[in-house]
Length: 105
Image 1 (cartoon, rainbow, N blue to C red):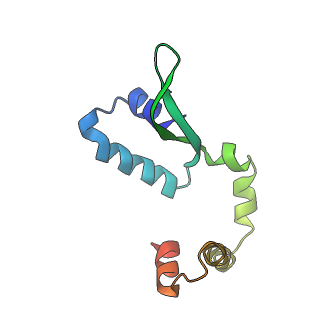
Image 2 (image 1 turned 180 degrees about the vertical axis):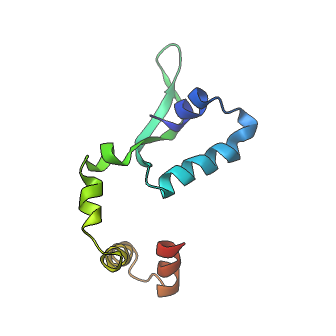
């Protein structure tokens, strides 16, 4: 579901934008939801308009229902190493200090 629909259905007002954004980030950090695309708003005339909004879905929907079973089989060290390797694949000059902060927060 696109974030603009989530915001509307949850009853967030325009002035509550930062609270809404914090809630989305918290749900992502706790692995309840993940970004799974983008979608523009649609007018009553069925025309797309505005900037695209991030679409969110459950982690299980995006990765498959067995995602948590697979994750349980990976040690913390293996997970950290895999994340570190992916960061370096995407950014070979990433500083180790920043990688650690990215992984551990």
